[in-house]
Length: 106
Image (cartoon, rainbow, N blue to C red):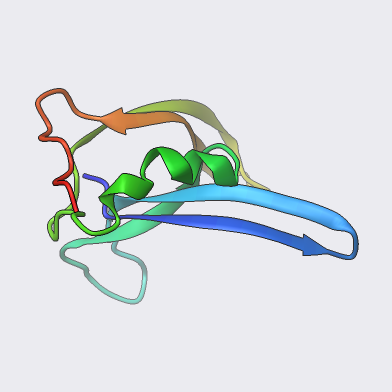
């Protein structure tokens, strides 16, 4: 489920930064401090700020529970600086799931 989309297009010190971040669910992991139940959203950048334009038609009809999507990820496994096994997910592509109703006309 896609829970949110954020566009970012800024210029700082003469350098342009452009991205679109898609917020997808992630498990709320337990840690040494205690237990956890539920999920949170995690932002994944995919494309530049113009990627947002493909989804802008949903601005007034975005489903409150999220939008079913299909995501293509690249997974890289390795070790972090402390030698622990780690993985990194990179969002390569995202699109509405087949059968998702089109956005309502506004």
